[in-house]
Amino acid sequence: MNSYFFARRVHSLTGIIPVGLFLIYHLYTQLYLHQGAEKYNEHTNAFYESPLAIWLLIIFVYIPLFYHSILGAKLSIEATPQPSYHYFSHLLYWLQRISGIGVLLFIFAHLYNTKVMPLMTDTYGQHFEHLAEGFASAETGWLTKSVYLLGILGATFHFANGINTFSMTWGLALTPRAQLRVRVLSILVFVLLTAVALYSLSAIW
Image 1 (cartoon, rainbow, N blue to C red):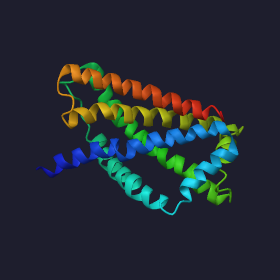
Image 2 (cartoon, rainbow, N blue to C red; image 1 turned 90 degrees about the horizontal axis):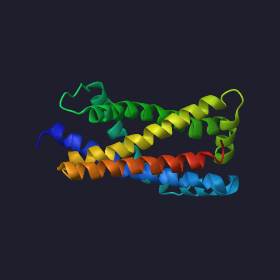
Image 3 (spheres, rainbow, N blue to C red; image 1 turned 90 degrees about the vertical axis):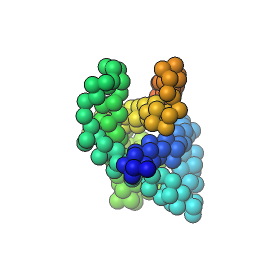
Image 4 (cartoon, rainbow, N blue to C red; image 1 turned 45 degrees about the vertical axis):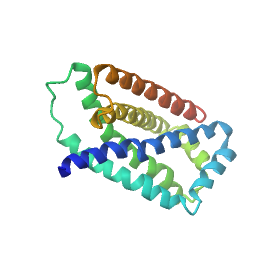
């Protein structure tokens, strides 16, 4: 089997199973924002303070995410117009690559905002307060909100559209009817995950 062919298959798989599932879990945990600071901090700290958490994150999230990001960046750089694609498919092709780069930048910004800054200000563990203060800041609140809004839209789109490309890459949707069903599913996933994320953030908006 061609090594590049295999790498593309692994890239597609990592975007759905470890990374995509973690995205769903992460968005679900943000619903705790509506239960207030105490509940949100308690739930978040309980996970990250678990002895197994760091190993689970490294093995099932960070390593797959690193691989997916590196190869994804390479594919984005090498992306070329696809004359055989219809307009909508061509649009999705480019949006998938643009959103991938955008989400990667957002992840760095998110990690800096939620991990590095609290350590620098000795407020680590006060996750709710830190997020709320960042969104409410008179000077930089608008920027924080804009970054998170674009980051969320990029992440949910990239994952949802990734379901569509995954199904074709792995031969799960070969007929036009099957591809239409998967595309409808990906749209529903995008709408649902985006709604969950925005509802969660409305607690501190």
